View 1 (tube, rainbow, N blue to C red):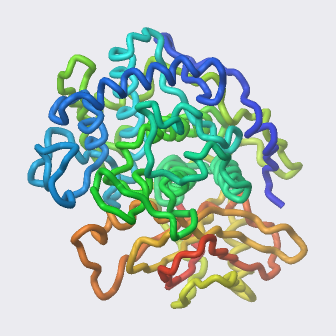
View 2: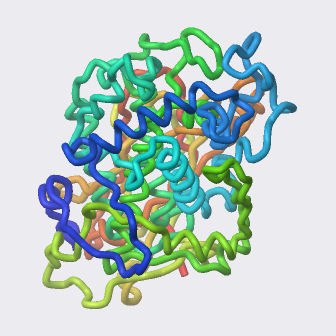
Length: 486
């Protein structure tokens, strides 16, 4: 039983109105599935039509804006969409700036860079569409599970053929996937740290962020469903959203990242939420370069970005979380735990070498005897103890599956702790396009904050890993460990 019981229906099916403590709010981002948001989607349609007609060297062009997120290192054959770009030697200013390279710098700046990126696109659409009050809608997946219809309409500039066919056919996200999305969003709420591998930002980046990229891009669909990816100019490929170098070219990208930003804003408004410090961000800097609506190039230092990103000119029509959405158990501590998992002091509670390929069968690892007792001892050692489960895995290709991770206590329901997703692995670790993988493969670490999932007991428990999908890429679990942070 979790120490915090979340009311799923309340969190996902309704939103509590709220006001931000900002003096410069001018725009409201709306649910893209609501009637009120249709005018904003139409404005996007008008703007993207103009952007698609611009030459790719124009900073306001659809191609230029998509390439700022990322772009393939090499285009297959002559680039019919952008003759000026054939390979990475031809990159223009600010192309390939997104936070997807696997470094600590990229991990820490993921949410902040993407917030600025979509904010500038929002300003461009406002200018090109002529809709003075335009604000970027969000796709509220988990509640509204049919993609907004304007994006599946082949006659609009927001349509993209290289997407999961279920979505482009106007059908809702399958129930199983909706449940996955709900679990991921709910688990994020009680994370006590913004930064670090087990923190809120990194966890959100995995799911629902990476999860939705792969779902929309068709990776989690029938493996036989492939597309012509017009950015790579390759047949029998995954959709635009499933690949970092082509994701920013699909118009649904912007609605997806508006939702990601909304989840972040929702968490920050809770008792658990916090902001990264400027010192943390400056220790691991990132470049912030964007195109203004008049075509000017805009560059920020980390300190300048920090002043802007938490005082922008929009709010959301409602948030996912409020403290009223949860019921505190009788033993819940009055003061919520807040911490920083960035560069923490670590104490290993236990670790075990596994070296086993995760197959279709459910993987069960028993935590018994002294390991279960040591876990509970560390958990009870002080108030607000931060316990993290680490899974070290190795892959040799980017998997098309995902793996859900649970803790299981005897006689209790399985406690969901997170999802292993693999969006961006090929890009982040140089395993895609013309790169080859070393004989040791790509080593990945998945860290999950589990203090809100552990029970106060010395009883044996189990770590459960469930594969979802029918892909054939092997994922080898090398090691499991439980650590105490700070």
